[in-house]
Image (cartoon, rainbow, N blue to C red; front, side, top):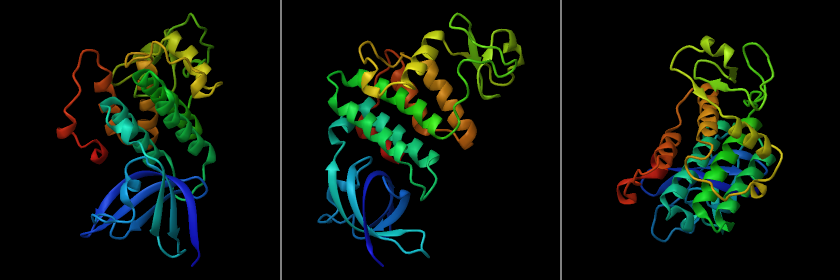
Length: 274
């Protein structure tokens, strides 16, 4: 049984027995895997802080064809997200990215584009001088491309009901009842749970994000309210296709609410939320 070495992002850990952990991680070459890290919960564990949420690491592991879980042997830390986790909004954003990966990525299916998307967005968090602006820009960018790479992104320039082209001046609406966008005329066809408008500004922004890297999208002026309608639309697409609610999406929405104080980190266990 040969040893494998893969660059990976740690998505989530689960306690196993007294000292072990089950680790869900996303590798560049093997896709999403789960494995057992023996004695990882002990004070002098050789894994150290490498198994923290969304740590970028180089993992060594053994994989048997007949077993669902691999055996983790060692972990070399490439980049920690510790400085991001100290900021509440950035920490919730990391949890949100990890939860999307858990639900959108099928096991053992390599996805180089998704891996590069994660790396680029997280790197933009670290490199930016405006941390809050970079976080909201990155979360929106990641959501859009995660939906697109999963094959769930509907046309943003056409009405699902009548097929008419949505011009920049036209209003567009979405709801949980149906995927895609609807023009103002077809809005009456939307049923159940009401509807929301996806503004022309957000549609233009989405088109730009689909053409450019995240660092080429200006971060100036971004806040929790920027493109909030676009994020709501994308989250609804994910929840409809994945058939489950995203816990961290609700936390992001609360963090985006103007004037709302952030919860005390001591009383919030974000990484265990999902």
